[in-house]
Length: 150
Image (cartoon, rainbow, N blue to C red; front, side, top):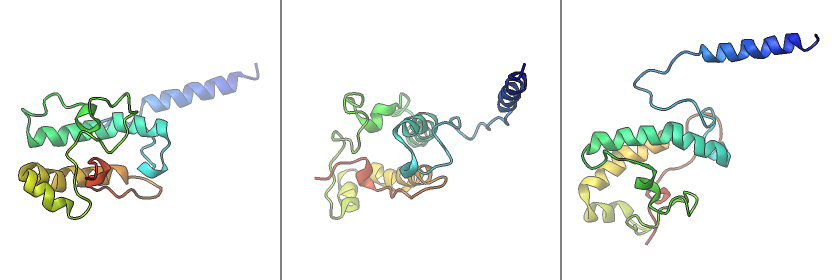
């Protein structure tokens, strides 16, 4: 019966995990995808988990607050494109508006001012915050994380 203490230890650990404090309604997602590591420190599996559990719910909220009617069906394809699975969710998304490497903000404002301001004031800072939570090297979030360069 030497294994009994280890079985009891596993049962205790599992029950303690089940008693973790619930997340509040203002915090979307679940703690999946190594939330204690920055984006740059995560491996591929952790990145997929973090995207599903943290980034998608938060970005869905940001886009719904901007234009609820336009983004009622917000999904991964809004950012990653219709061929996201075939290209393994690679970014930048070649189907998004291509920005010039010099003065991308000016070009974006000229192309579609309301969405450009939204991207600069809400989307980019939110991604910057999400990708840089935890320990590890920082990730600089710019227009070119999502948009191709022209």
